[in-house]
Length: 352
Image (cartoon, rainbow, N blue to C red; front, side, top):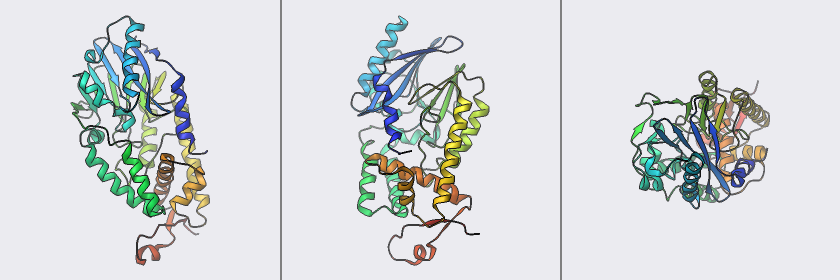
């Protein structure tokens, strides 16, 4: 599969209007499409249940995102024949600390005093964004050098990573999920680290809001844990397994991208198989030594822009998983240990 599909499949929302759903107990749900970046769409959700008026995720805050969010609230108010506005929100819940899901908070905070919640392990992304960027940028530069990316290209990729996040103004977080007992009224949370350190899914009756943890058309992006603790493929696969046991009796799963999922267990099994196939493919490739950059090109072909970084991270997450389990060795260990400068790591399967 060409890695460019990671982005293109997310463009479906641009042709959709606000869609409406109900839970088994009558909670009203509006799915609001937001153009987070040009031709890159995400969903926020407005939930109306009893005295609760909850916004789940806020998009990026860039471009048309905030206008899309306002339009979505107006569409829900019209459809439900009830007054709805930002200042009528009771809570704002963020599924995880990626900019396309929380960046709109700068806009929302100006219009709403509703308390904002996120998991402890992603709180830093919202409250100390510049510090977080600096930490990850340094680790990413090391990762790209180890991966065999030329220095000038690596510098460009680090700048691309930072570019989409620089306009966000850090602000308050009012509560964190573990401190709240992983529950807020009728909403229950499960911590599912992997795609991000503090990712949660949120259960309301028989509906699951799953952010980017499980998506209907793609396997959610993975990055090495070496970039951010509590991410990585190992955490992600463990979280998928945890979700299988926790999210029983779920009829409808609503993600941050793509179409609704009506068979959550079946989709989880499909994603698990995608990763197992990718691990097997890498093991076969590494009969001969390769860098992560070379593996990335073999897996995903020619990609451009931000997709280059996504492809490298995806390949790196799978190589890290295999290396952690003793299935790979560093083939050029002497060069890596004794060579001058920063020598890229060449991995190889263990020889019999």
